[in-house]
Every structure is written in C-alpha cells, then in structure tokens.
Image (cartoon, rainbow, N blue to C red):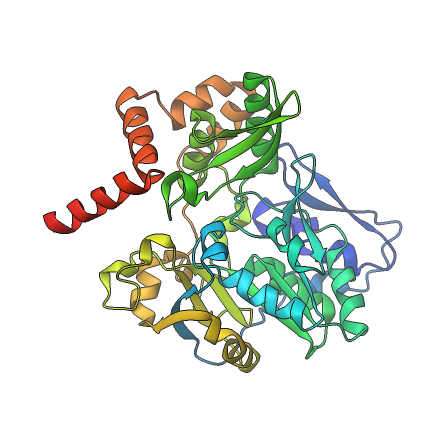
Length: 403
C-alpha cells in the first residue's frame, strides 16, 4: 500500500490521484481534508495488496527524469494576440495550437462554471483559452490519467500540461512509453488550497453581491507582465471587471510567502533542472538584465523553456519559427527560478494562516494585505498610465532618458 496510508503524513502525498485511478478494485478514494486538499483513503476489505498504487506514486516510486542535459531558452511568441492573453511568453498556447492542428488533443487546468479548478480535455483551438494562464490553486485530476491513456491507445496525439508531480503521476500510471504523448511541466512554486481560494471567492461575491465568472491570477492588462490579479463578476447578467481588491492581494501574498501550500510542496522531489517532461515552461524573470533579443519587448512577457528530451527537441524545431528566442545560461536561469534548485520554504505562519482564512477571514485579509492609501493610489495611477497609450509612451520615454 502507498506510504501515506501507513504514515498519515501529509507530506507523503501530492494529491495527483494516480493511485486512485490505477486501482482496478476501486479500493482507493480521494477525500478532501480540513485544509481543502485531497488525500487517499483505502478500503482494506477491497484491497488485494497488488502494489500498483505504490508503483504509480510520484512521492514514493523512482522519479522519471530525462537523462539529457536540458537546453535553456528564453522565448516569446510572434503572435501579439496570444502574447497579450498569456501569463508570460505564450509558449503553452503555441505548442497547444500546433498539437491540435495535427489532429491532437490538449489536457490542462481550467475553471468550471462554479469556479472549481480541474484538468480537462480540449480538441479545438477555441477551447484553449480555458487552459491559458497561471492558476495558483491545485487542480482536480479526477479520471484524467485514464482519459489520456484512452486517447493514446487510439493513437491520438496528446499534449499534457501540469505540475511536475502530475506529469510524473501520468507517466507512472501509463507504465510504458507512448510516442504520441508530449508533456510539459511547470516550474512550480507550490499548490495552494482550493478551500482557501473558494473562501476568497465567496467573500468577493458576497462583498459585491455578485457571482464570479472568471479569475485571472496573472492579468497583463492590470500590471503588465507581473503577478497582478483580476476577476470578472456578473451583476444582473452584466459583466463587471474587477482589477483590484485587497482580498485578491491577500490570497496572492499568502501564497507567495509559502503559507498556504500543500505540505508535500515543501519537500518537493522535482526541484531539479533534470525534469520529468519533454519541455518545461516558466517565466523568464529579469531577462532585461541580459543582452538578448528582448531588450525592447520583455515587458510583454518572456517564457523560460527547458528542452529536456529528443521528443522535446523535435517539437521545438516544428514551432520555433513562430517564436523569437535566445539561448540563455543554466546558472542564470536557475538563479532567477529558484524552484529549479530547491523547494519553496514553508512560511512561518502556515498553520495560523489556515485558521485565519477559514475562521477569521477579516484578520487573514488584514495580515496579508494591510490597508495602504499610498499603495492603492500608486496602483491606480500606474494602471491608468499603462492603459492610456499616449501616457504610457511618455512614461517609457522618460524612463529611458533617466537611465
């Protein structure tokens, strides 16, 4: 049986659900704990102790790593419409479009109508908008691995994108190599609790007397290539765009400070430049420090990609003409993406943060997003300038002169 069943230690389970899906006896079910994370519960009366659940557990089985030294690139799509709507350089969308144009399907994380994050299957270019963009909450994998296997057995090309543990869980679940499978993992900071995100969403809806219909964790329209959140809400069937709220700020700051992540994230075994996927996707933060092709365009977002396998090289050669790219150094890339070398640190308020978020919500917001008139005015001034073409041009010209 899986290690978590014996230890009951939250750090021993990443919640990928591979064990649940591999069990032909349906002896394993995933149940949500008090923090909002799924953990396996085993019905020992149905279990035949076959050991398959152990073999597919990313936290327990041998890791699947590529033996090749990765190629580090900074890249940006040439399609300005895709770039504008992407969290960074648009590489996911570029690969996904290529896959669908070849008759394939794409699996990634999307919000449902009730704003619950789960992995879904997309077989058309229009549907890719649901998968685009960073989402700082753990997605529900449900029966996705089984669906991927069915597609692969039908010889359909599959592009699967997820956190490293989800990609590893898929590969271990499949138990064999498929030449029609292509994977991308993310340089992951960790997965926050869906229960806390649900709490934030419900309070936003109550405050505005509305129903949330969309939430963006990385909206370039708000703060350019950054981590600025936004949401859409429905009031009397009319959509309203919310660009700033302390509650959204509190959620992001609680996340980035390491206080609302799953316990396994603090001991993640995938924090290495030797990745589990064919191509790794991340943000190429601070690219403006280097003498690259992005001196004038970096503000629009630049992706860091690691090409990890021969399959990854082949795919990159097929899409690279749709991108602007430059080679960058491994050491520099790892310095600016620390999760390539080490797991995120556990915040010193983790347990207290869950208690505040779920039992004393106003204190949670005040702790992670204290009121500041100065910061609010500064935000709206920057937002107004960024979305006024003439003012933004003047501001950028002034900045270059000062440099």
